[in-house]
Image (cartoon, rainbow, N blue to C red; front, side, top):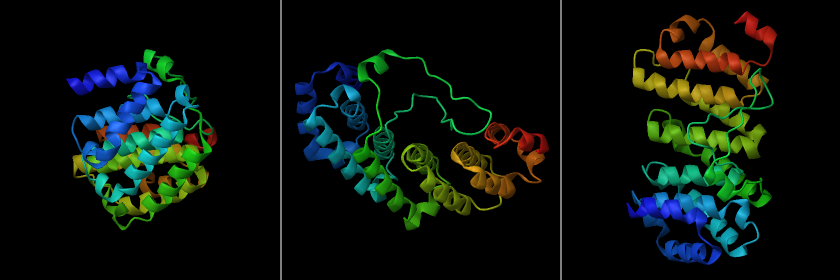
Length: 265
């Protein structure tokens, strides 16, 4: 209950109070990242300290970047931790300049017939202010992107909901700072998933199709065609019989590069 109260109050705190929190958290960051309650307070502190409201505060900006580097430098351990994993997700979102509202799916505004939807401004948004992309923050995320993609265990992350969920957030946020690099990640992701979907294992197909949906949302034309040829050609009927498979087909149509191609599906 205390952690919930702190989460609610932090957005309204002044700079001095926020700095006191950052000073108190820093010596125990590793423990806090894995704590079932304190980790949520840390996530909120990262959110607040990275918003434009405190853009002129060198103390908060420095703490935010140092904390992000610490979290991402420990990704080998934190990726598999049920609480630190979510701290990593928040770090990626804040570094990318966009903290995704709960329940909103990423939409690539530059392709397909779908139009980017506007999210109503909430009280939290008015307190935090907008987050403009920042070159230093983007560079931290780009460097992590390269290290994470080269991680030997990257191919083991797609069969567990926790780690698969992080990959999804990682792709979404990385697209904002390195759209070309994300296409390389999509290629790696397709390789990791394999050509055959686990149609006889509902839990597996749920994770696989969700990842495919996400890849479609940030794929360029070449990557889109590769995904289509790998997973959808000759399988639309089979996928349509699965609840999650239907959503993949919907995303396929929404992200299709041209109306003409939609007609040929």
